[in-house]
Structures are given as C-alpha cells and as structure tokens.
Image 1 (spheres, helix red, strand yellow):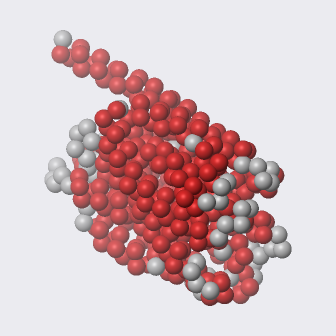
Image 2 (cartoon, helix red, strand yellow):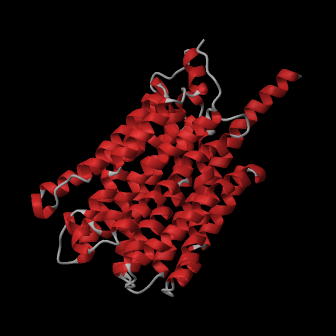
Image 3 (tube, one colour):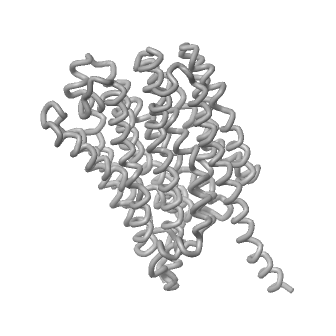
Length: 436
C-alpha cells in the first residue's frame, strides 16, 4: 500500500492558487475581448460586428472545454489528479503568453485571428481539464464532513483570478489609447509566464489525492471512466450541468457582457465600469467562503435551492440600478447579482462531486461542469450583445435572459438533490440490515 500524509490545508491552498492563475489567464482574454480584441483582430466598420467576432473567439474556448473535460477526466481517473493539474497549468501559461506575442490583423492579416482562435482553443482545453482536478484535490484531501467547504477553495480561485485580471486591465486602460492598442494590451498576457512558474512550484509539493490512491491501490480504477460515467450516471451529469448554469453564464453576463453594455450603449467610461467591477469582485471574494460555511450549517441542498431562486429575481434591481449611470448604484446592483450567483458557484463544486463515485468522479464532474459552462458561459456575452442590438434601449429582455439562466440552475439543483437522496437510501438500508 502507498503511504499518504493527510494535507487538507495544503491541498486546498494549492487548488486555490492554481485556479487563481488559470482563471486570471481566462479572464484577461474576456476583458480584452470586451475592450480591444475586436479592433485589433476583427476590424470592421460596424463596432458591434467587431465585438461580436471578439466574443465569438471568446466562446471558442468554451466550446473546447467539454471535450477537454472528457480527455482529462479519463486520464485523471486512470492516472491521477496531480499529473493532470501539472499539464493543464503549463498548457494555459504557454497559450496565454503566446497570445501576448501575436501579431495583429494590421500586421499579419487573416493569420492573426486564426492564431488567436487557435491559442484560445488551447486555453479552453486547459481550463476544461483543470477545474475537475483542482476541485477533487481539495475535496478528496478534506476531513470527513467538510468536503463541500474544502472544494470551495478551488472555486475561490475564480474571483481571485478576476481581481488580478482587473488590476492588470485597470493599469493598462490608464495608458494613452495609442500605446494601449499598440503594445499595452499585451502586458497582462505576457505576465502569465511568470504566474505559471509559481503555480508549478506549488503543485509539485502536494501529494496525490488519497481517495484516488485508495481506488488505485485496490485495483478498482475504471478501464474507461468516460464511457462508464456516461452510461451509468448520465442523469447526474445532466442535472449537474444545469446546476452550474448561473454560476458560469451569469458570471460572464455581469463581468464581461456588462462592460460592453455600459460602455457602448450607455456611454460610461471603461475605467468607471472596471472600477465598479473591481469593488464587486472584492465583495465576491470575501463572500464566497462565507457562503460555503453557511451552506454547511443550513445543508448544501437547501442552500443551493434558496440562492438559485434569489438569482431569478436579482437582475431586475440590478438593471434598475445600472440604468442610473451612477457608479455607486451600479456597483450595488451588480454586487447584488454577483454575490448571489457566486454563493451557488462556491458550493456547487463539492455538492456535485459527491454525486459521483471516486473511480469516475474526475470524468463525471468535468463533463458536467464543462458542458454547462461551455454552452452558457461562452455564449452569454454573444447572446447579450445580440439582444441589446435587437432591443435597443430596453433592459427587460436582458433581465429575462438572466432569469432563465437562474431557473435552469434551480432545476439542476433540484434534480441533483433527488438523485443524491436516492443514492443514499440504499446505503442506509444496507447499513441498517447489517446492524440488525
């Protein structure tokens, strides 16, 4: 038998730092797509078309994520969580750094957007494999009864990465426009190489997941975990994919599409909305661990149903406050929506992980999460931009769109809760019969 030293705090810290770096890389692309990539790589006389094209390249990363989830899920369930996490952080760091070195359309013509889309595809593959491994390294090292809370540390990396991305873009958007468009936009991407080295050093120091090691030592690993989880646990995948909808789609609605909405359609300065989102993200960063602790006390299923229901009504006060154009009211409105959806996001990872057996868990949660986030997270900014163009000056269609995303999550949480309860009943019955 292999010996393992319990290191739950170190594993949680490594999950947090690793996902912080991964999401920093992912978010700087989102901000660049909203602010500069359309003009640099997809020039057009119509600014909306350029923005749509930039958001289309952003969506490419999400399209790759379900397929990456299958590949890395298979390898993670066969070879181990740690090995996959080392691969994904290198892949993300190299792809993001190379984006910072790309020539623009004016310099290389059609090859510039082709190169951008290819590197964006690599970013999507990296995140598609990263998320499931990071969640499991934290949750499978966790003490008994604390798996959902420890898994939330992987989710905590999302607002931390966003904060780093916002700091980087607040810095470069203060530059002269000519400098920003010629070389300043490259700085956040080039920083990724340094962050990659930090992440690698930290992850090397964390041992393999004890739950995976137990499965491997007892020769219970699945020969084809992806096929097995799709055949035996497809309902879990379906409901888990629905459950993550607002956590992913709603997040990119408020933090990516909203930049375009207020700058292009309300005439608000870029620095104003970035300052607003910076404050919102700090509050999200502070609230997420509190949400995870509250969910432990109330019961994760009950908590998730409650916040998903609140997310359905959240966009209406948000848009009423954003419409004022006042930075304080805007910040309050977006904070309301973000704190609610991030509460679900913080808890859902550990909750859905417990719905799959350890031998196919990496595959199950990766496919589910990447399917849900791939369809909604990647398409949300594009659909938001389309709705804004179709219903110029009207915010109600956008609010309804947000509510639909939240309703999908509520349905997913309810379905996942029923499946988890059904799985526990046979185990409880077996235990009681054994005692009798």
